[in-house]
Image (cartoon, rainbow, N blue to C red; front, side, top):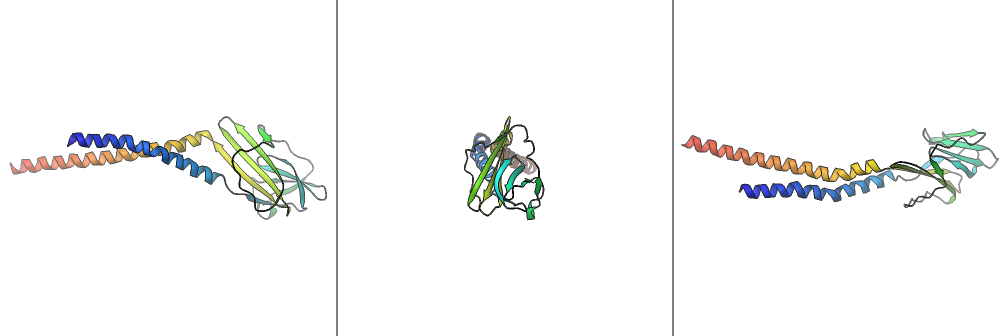
Length: 194
């Protein structure tokens, strides 16, 4: 009886963490799909833009039909064209930003016909961020943004096996605790009867 209980406990302690490995990959995949958000509307400046001049992770510069230059810093509010400001020149780009870099994974299409797009990436050790800007035929500017962090990915992958092990420990402790209480109860009943 105790040998069988020990074997089942060992199987639980090994099996549930192993079953947690695919769960960790599923969690990572779900997180990546959630993080690869859809396109966000940035509106458009007062004058209809004709071209994307430059872009950074948090800013996009466009040239309007009348030749004026506008910037949208989308770290703040973007509704009702709130981010668009007319400027004289393009600002300095953040260190490590790679303009016109390529992104190898699939990016969903923005809601409209693309006139022009610009892609910028930033890499630092185990982290990366990708921003894609699209100028549509109607003059609106759209943003697609994606961040990746290898350390966070490892944490998400480890969640499956760690959760499996924690569940196995709880099951085994409860199971052995109930078995121990039953054995104690039987001994107490046997003493009471004798």
